[in-house]
Figure 1 (cartoon, rainbow, N blue to C red):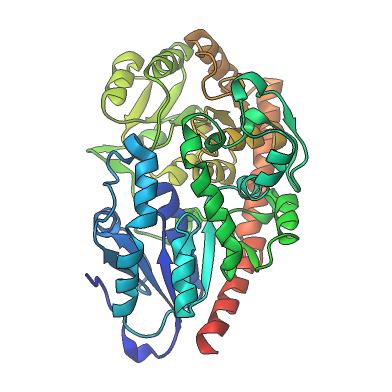
Figure 2: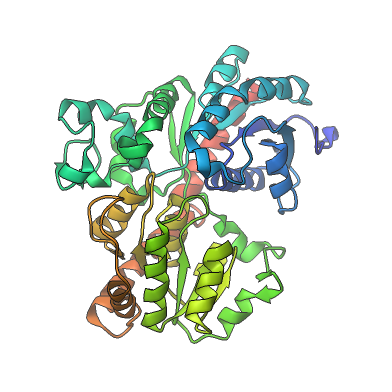
Length: 467
């Protein structure tokens, strides 16, 4: 199904075909990058490829006219419930999508694709591009540091840190990965141990295919991961671009259609307007995985006992439990415009699962974190936030995902200390968070490192389209 066509009278242009991994945490940064590409150069046409199900989710979102959707059939399990069998979903994206994607390429209107921008997880795109003599650009949507840990898997083997038994050896230090500050074994991405181990071979395969692409893009701010990025440039023989946070910061001031905050008949932005400045804790544990039922019960009770105001993103029975136990101290919503919420004056801190997109939005908004990681890259992100950047505190002090239950008394005390604006530690962590916000603002402003890298990428792919 072709969903939109451009006016061909506009003449030749650079044509980017974007193939995201079908998950919200991957589609969002790729769409944000495509928005930046399309708005910076109106001679760029972006064809954004999604399944028919994902088109239903995305079709109403505002976008530049030079971004069009094209769909492939629903050849993978539904987004709703995919977490129930994540390895099976992953295999489906690797085995079922290549053929319909090639058929889509065959029927695309001219101009011929200048480059295929693909999520690193969709490694088969490299083969498609190479067979058709179309350059491919790999977009990595986790931190550069996490990419580096996978890239140097051989060093973990050599130093005896794989297999990773974090329950017994979680405190052991890993200090030999180029460009990475010292980490503990328990900070490693969860695909290195436990149930996550089922997908490790696939992740390593993704990474091994990257040098066969023509470009590599990181959704990070260079100044935040400079040592890591510089070290990678020494080992990966293709151009690397650090394109900035790939969050919708560009919409905050310029897009008048940006979401107004009303959902299910309730306007959470109006509610935030009615709260005192720097008084609300924003809580979001992500949309893909969740903590155990027992731990969630303790979190809810701890937030209630702390007495703080909160805006909490939660769904289903969890949302009902929060509303029942926490009374009128806060608001519970099934979804919100997270960056807009975090930039609101009434927000004072961010309780986060430490997904990379959420981490970047929290840093951009200048808030400290309470980190409560669940899986994947989140433990390493939590370590970066707390130990390297020093802009957060850990909710759980243990060394692995299966560590002890954090009780309500601990949680209540932690939140109260965290929300105390007058304490010395509270002032210090907020001052640090504001310093990191300034780094983000400089990088994403005119002439900053993000704009410079995006423009360099546009220049390089545009040369391909006219060569």
